[in-house]
Length: 475
Image (cartoon, rainbow, N blue to C red; front, side):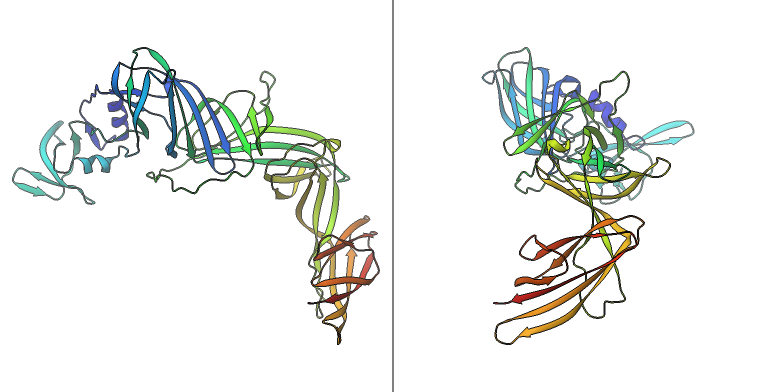
């Protein structure tokens, strides 16, 4: 009767189904669930582990295991009874041929149905044979072929090979008739998580507070109530397999946020190493709804020392560029160390930077992404471009070496600070070949084989020229 109810709900105003009973099948649904844990990876997959209490008759039986994710990867399913010697799985099928109006009609091609029409407060039934369902149903009624026949179509029973929802079906042998715990695990697509960070700068922009949230999404096709939630941070390798294609459904996403209240302990994540990754376990159960975006706080810290840079990188240095100017990139750098109120693995995610205006209202300054960042590494964020810090550059001389394969080139970059306070600008020179700066107005520091930089202090309203000469050899 349970299946019949689900069928009727799915086919309201379209089809009616007669009584159905199949004594050879036992069913297990979410109501039998004793525990469930979900581990979500950055790679867009989840690992589901659940236990259910079931009562099976002795002998060889078919068990329908319902309320699994519709994005399940069937080849990853593992099932185990309390005593593997007394409960043996012979065969497994993943059934995703779901009940729908069209699929039921397709199953009844060549079979008899009943079509009811309302006439003068009466419902009159007509027996018909469905002979085709290619777009529109074609019926044989008596000796006539009907290309269209309005009415409510009913069928006598539900086909065995159609299911109300994605279902695992096992053929198994049970040696002992008693209630026992069945442990099932599987991987599923449609689950993902990322970290979101809120960085709040102080007035001087040399200190900040950092708040981190875990944002997870579930489009796997089912919900997980009161689940143990675990997250794996890191880049795991997966063999690329094509998932089973389900009938698309309209997705309505909802968003929830776990927050602290006076009578509710705020959820916290416990962190541990897992081989070459980091595992975060939420310290209390949570419900992961289907088509839901959920946020849970990962951590928060205050008083991070931070340094702000105005950066010119890849500034055009060619003739004819004198009348054009370029805005400096705004970057913030801070160290992920315990001394700097951090010192923890930071999962990949988006960092949004805020600062309060004169009325104390937090305003967005920009956002950037970070990769998985281990302890003791620097975090570098670009939030946008500075309105009042501009520069333009040009090449002032060029000389080709006649004997060796090389040249000597001189450049000049004019940097202007239109702000009302003193700043420091980091100017990068991008170079190729075997280069050497032989003359400059400022001290350059080599960062890589192609980049060197100098930090230039500039007073409010001041203009500073950075001039340098480069000798380059080519092989």
